[in-house]
Length: 109
Image 1 (cartoon, rainbow, N blue to C red):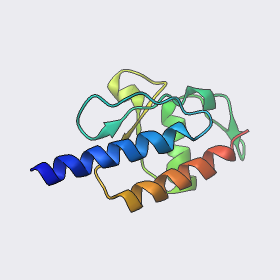
Image 2: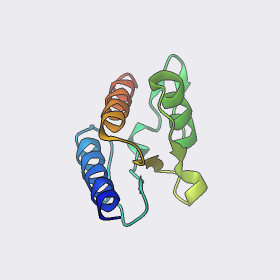
Image 3: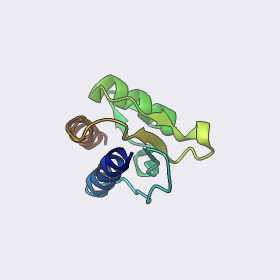
Image 4: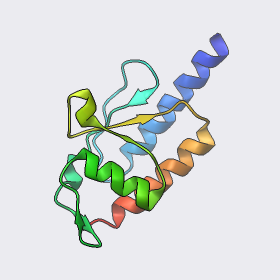
């Protein structure tokens, strides 16, 4: 429906703008579906509590454990420098997830 199409467009615009403001994330414009696929490779080699981020899988596990946000490793989609984030939820949930991701990423050094 037109209402759902508009809602997903708003969600896409929200999450791409929000991710663009998180230092270290390189985002690209989503071409379809309801996912974004930002490059998070700038965090590789960084650590938290003795755990080093070597790839997108490590970063996804770190964010799940420390930010309580579930992402999918880009390795499953042919690019280990990226993660897959769904925006098939409301703006409030997306805002909270982005806030948690940003806080957790700032803890890496």
